[in-house]
Image 1: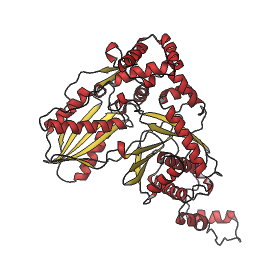
Image 2 (image 1 turned 120 degrees about the vertical axis):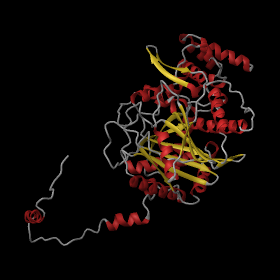
Image 3 (image 1 turned 30 degrees about the horizontal axis):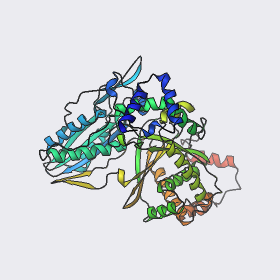
Image 4 (image 1 turned 30 degrees about the vertical axis):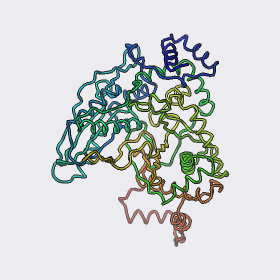
Length: 530
């Protein structure tokens, strides 16, 4: 069939009443065909009411629970050094808004449920503020954090904010923040790339030559719902429900404070300094075991969690870009999906055996990556709690250099570079982010500051680093025997803390000793309870 015939086929499928879609889906399946192999049509103009994607639907629910929260803000900050053409930058922003309808989408709900509505493209002014004399790094830090933590109103918008801090005539900081309901990590890179391309063209008096977008995000939402509800949801759901438990106990890491009844989004991030060459050594181990670096790192993280929690059956959330369609690769929108990777760890087995299990789970998950996480939660119906997220409480996210902006970019006389900002939110108890680049492997831990102190996370990072080195040295060694403590910690635990010998006054009774202590410090607290 031609591309036009395929498009017409999918259009006919989406237009069918809900009751007839299942038969259409089954007929395609009987011929060995899937809607996943067919193009996504642009059909949003046929529907006066546009549904939310499944991912957007969950974000809408979360926002209604905590409209002042900032955990789902997506900030990106650029340092612009050199002569800046603010008018060209403004035009580039307006071109983005015209090109990507998601950036001018708002949300509402009525008796028929939630829907997304598209605003006409209009001017989004860049707010310019002048820095004061004095502590420039401090002003940049305060500016970036303030912009990243401001809440969004999903009903009124806008859901893209831009603010420019003027440090000097040729030195600016541009803070761009979106809400997750209209964007994701991949989208942020698309936005930066197109903003820079647009600026380069407009500053020279030309129009940017962007490739035409075949669809918009609302088209994807229509297609996704029709595809899932016709039968794909049931097919993929069968895979996941066979592997996950509705009654999976929460991961209980040792925390510095009791878990609050209602979890807040307060968080911090710790950058981890890894040993030189560890990335290359782990990549070589992955090749030898027929795995990927992602799989090795995930397995090492799961082992760390097992050693800390004492639990042998645990789940970790893993985000996937969900950009396996040509139509979605250049779109700004909320496509990222979350998978739940369950592992059952036998401390007597070697890391190589654990890696084989993780590899099998990862490959199966990749083959069933389209099921929205929200539908999995609905199907399993785990016990809900405001104190922690359902199905998993910790996350692992691995990125390669291909999807991560590194270094700077020159635009004529303008140098563009990213500005790091201090994370102050955390969606989960703990998230390990790893970054693979030509320069090696780097990592960070983002943690819920309601639960953990920075010193605890620093110790955890050190233990993970020790495990990585032990895994590389002997991947067949029993997991229980892989050393997590370094030499100093081990010496302190075995000898320092056990050096408890003391002279005890055996000639006096305990009651006498207590009485003597009371006489010495009569006003001191003796006991605190509760």
